[in-house]
Length: 261
Image 1 (cartoon, helix red, strand yellow):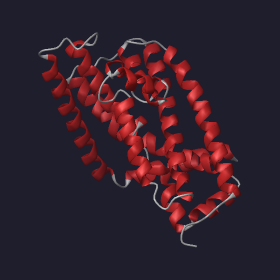
Image 2: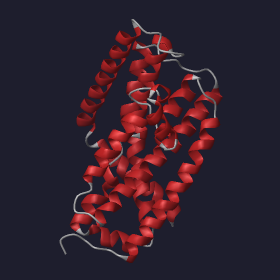
Image 3: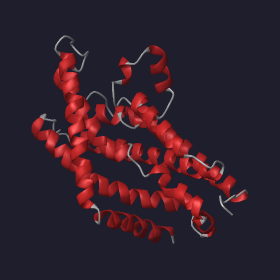
Image 4: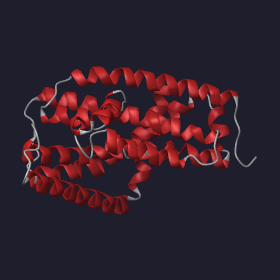
C-alpha cells in the first residue's frame, strides 16, 4: 500500500505547485540575485585576501553552488505543513490513517523538492554556469556522489522540519523553531562561510551536528575538494533522525492534544 501512496502524494504536491509557477519564478529570480550579491561580496574580500585553498574563483563556485543547493536542502515546507493541521484538528485524522504520519508528510515533501529542483535549482544552476563558469564535471562519479549527498541532505532537512511540525502538539507557537533552524543552517552548514573558517568553538559545534551535510559537504564534493567519504558521515544522521521521527510520532499517538478543542 505504501508503495502506491508515495508516488501519488509526491505527484499531487508537485502538480499543486505548478499552479503558482509565475509567483515562484519571481522567487527564483530573487534567489539568483541574492547569489550575485553574495558572490560580489567575496570578490571584494578576495582583492586583499587569498581566500585559502579556494582562491577567488573557487569561492565564486562555492558560493554559487551553495545557492543552487538551498532550494533542495534548506528551503523546505515549514513544519512539513503539520503546524496548520494541528490548529485545524486535521492532525487527528492524519494520525488515524493506516499509513505512518512521517511517511505521508515525507512523501508530499519529496514532490515539493522535485518541483523546486526543476523550477528553481536547475535554472539558477544554468545561469551561474554561464555567468560564473560554474564547472561541469566530466566525471560520472562526481555527479553520482553529489546527487547522493543532496538526497541525503534533503532527507535530513525533511526529518528536522517534521520534528518542528509535530512540536506544535506541545506548544501553541512552533514557528519560531523554523527560524531558529534557519539561523543555525546559515551559520553551521557552510552556506555563508566555509566551515573550516569558523572560529574554533563554532567549528566544533558544526562538526558534531548534521548541518555541514546540508550544504558544505555536497558543495565540496561537487567542486572536487572531497570524495564520497563525507557520505559515510551523513548516513548515521539519516538513520538517527529517522528513528527520532518515528519515536516522536509514537509519543504523539499516545497523547494527542488538538489546539482549540
